[in-house]
Structures are given as C-alpha cells and as structure tokens.
Image (cartoon, rainbow, N blue to C red; front, side, top):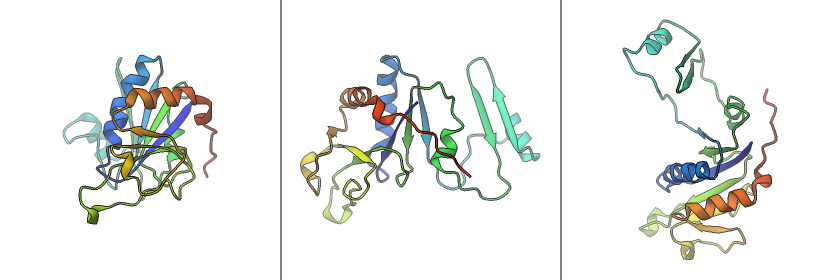
Length: 181
C-alpha cells in the first residue's frame, strides 16, 4: 500500500482535493482508502439506530455489515490518542493507495495544500520550509508562495497531474509498517 498525506490549514482545500483525487485514481485501476483526522468528539451514528442503541448500552465495539459495506464503531472508556499509524493498521492491506487528510505533524510524506490569503493579516505560514516530509505543494497561486522551493508545485485544480505524479513516483510512497505500542 502506498500512502500520501494532505496537510494544510482549515479551508485550504484538502477535503475537496482528496474528494476529486479518489475517482481519478479509481479510473486508473487503483483501490483507494482514506484516513481522516477528526477533532474531539465526533459521531457517525445517530440516535434511534440499532448500532447507536448498542453503543449506548455499553458495547465496546459494534460492527455492522451488509453486502455493500462494513462499519466498525469502537468506544473508548477513557480518552485515547490514536496516531495515524494506528488508523492505517485498521485498513485492508489490499488497498493500493491511502490518502491521509490531516495529521500534519505525521512522519508520512505529504502534499501541502496552501492558499494565498485574501488579506495580508490572514496569512498562514507554509509548512514546506520546515517539514521535511512535505514532498510537493498544491496551491491556487504559486507566485504567492512565501519562499522559493525545488519541490514540485501543482495547481489545486490539476487533479490529473497530481494523480499522474503519484503513480509515476508510487514506490516512493510505499508504506513501511510502523510498530505502535
């Protein structure tokens, strides 16, 4: 499995880029999974559903499946900090690509998603100058990057070009399993 992260500030366009990249990779015969960082308490289940009722009754895990999908919901008794490698370990090993959104401080190769601010006071720092895991930049305004770089720069709308680059350099993104404790 090959892994590429997408790092950037909220509103930069990470989710849209990942959403647009998935079908392009699929059309090229790739199986794609996504790992997404969520903040604090989130829920994918809703009151009144059987799975929600089972969790409310105290189940540690609820797995629900059909002929179309499987979902696993796990409750932690105490706050548990899951790292990106913990989440990757939960994925099907037969997937070709894992697109990781968030986890900007991870030790995974990442594409930085950066937008020039509309106003100077809204400026957000770039990460490529200090994060050696940034291997490329996707931006709407390459001329506004605050520092020159030798990294490949992609237009945010050039999803085909980004996919082509990923596939061309696929072995660079091959995942080495991390042991977690």
